[in-house]
Structure formats: structure tokens, C-alpha cells
Image (cartoon, rainbow, N blue to C red; front, side, top):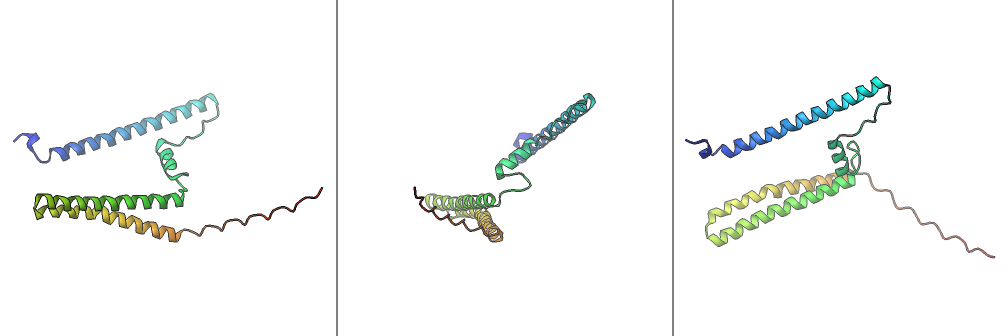
Length: 158
């Protein structure tokens, strides 16, 4: 039996590729930390002030995605992301189910209808995201009332 005829060749290749990505990312992060340490040691030896600590690329990405620093995410934006994710998952689940129902009607084989059950997975995930969104919305403190407008200044007489 040839290795390419095995049903496990694609999953094994995927796992090897994934492992390669993890190894490359780890080595890259190590080299970046090593370079930063060398720069700091060189600055200390020369008596120069230390360069400010810059956030890593992952920290920058996380901060930009949440609209704040990684330690203090914006709760309103997070609730919006949950709502968007929930709507997308529910729509995907419904779309998959409708696709398999239409396919069952076209090929006239009821066994194809079993594929519609696959649509229940993203549908359930979407419902869970929307439930989480509503729970987080209830836990959020109420917004302060808008400030009352200032009364108009009295007319000045000349």
C-alpha cells in the first residue's frame, strides 16, 4: 500500500504543517526577545537611557481589535462582537440546513437530508453567543443619563 493511498495522509500532512507553524512562531518569538535583551544590555553598557518597552505585535493586535488596551477591553464593543458573531453563526447554520433540504429535493434521496443536521452546530453556537451577549448586557452598569442642555443665555441689552 502506497502512503498516498492512506485515508490518513491529509490529516497527517495538516498536523505536520500546523506543527511547523508553531515551531516557526516559537523560534521567531525567542529571537525577538533575544534581540531586545541584547539591545538593552548594549544600552546599559554604554550608559544610555533604556529604550521604552514597546508592546509586542500580539499585544498591538489585541489592543486594536478591542479598542483599548488588552487589560481593559471596551465592554460595549465586546457585546457588539458577540452579537455579530451570533448572527453570522445562526445565518450559516440556517444556510447549511436550507442547502441540504434543497439538495434532498433535487436528488430525490432522503439520506441527503442527514447533512442538514450539520447546520445545527453553527446554529447552536450562534444562539449561545446571543445568550452570552444578553447576559453581558445585563451585567453592564447602566449608562449615565445625558447631561441636560444649558438654558440659553439671557439677551444682552446695549
